[in-house]
Image 1 (tube, rainbow, N blue to C red):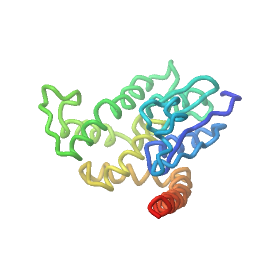
Image 2 (cartoon, rainbow, N blue to C red; image 1 turned 180 degrees about the horizontal axis):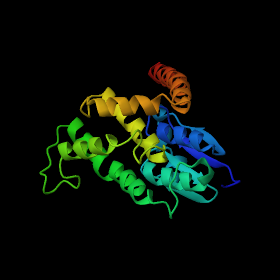
Image 3 (cartoon, one colour; image 1 turned 90 degrees about the horizontal axis):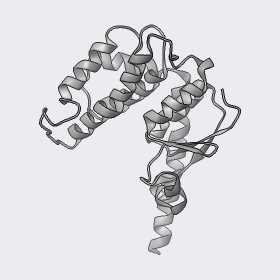
Image 4 (cartoon, rainbow, N blue to C red; image 1 turned 60 degrees about the vertical axis):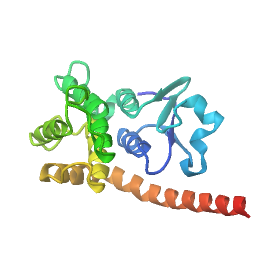
Length: 219
């Protein structure tokens, strides 16, 4: 556990939402730095020094800056082993934990983004093989137990539960019962409910602010 306060750079209804839930689940000591992506906050010179890609989330731990959602999740979960959301180095689940976290970034997200834009990449070239293969592999793993690694929840479940919630919402994954039931189980946790409720309020306020700015600029 670290005594130093972390800083999570966040915008509502973005990938940063998942990390906010995870930090709450970890009981982390952190400050939420809210950015208004609609107002261009993420393209400001100040923020681009933190993440040159102009994306959230980003996590600051003192002088250390971590970007990329999976990297942040792995880093933060290891900081709080007492939360028991990360298998330790000697835990036999550690390999599967790392595998499915990497699978999310390396296979799942590219597959669903390509599907969303109807981009057909030949199986021999696509790093994830094929969209259907990704869905089948994930479903087969989730059918084994209530959680990704068995009977105990991990940080990987926070990631996958969030991912399946929004991909099911937009029809980017098949509406198979195993996906629906798993997403419902994870998203029913109080941490998800609190964050989603609060960010709906934040999102509405940011949209209103962006609209006022647009009106003022046009007048």
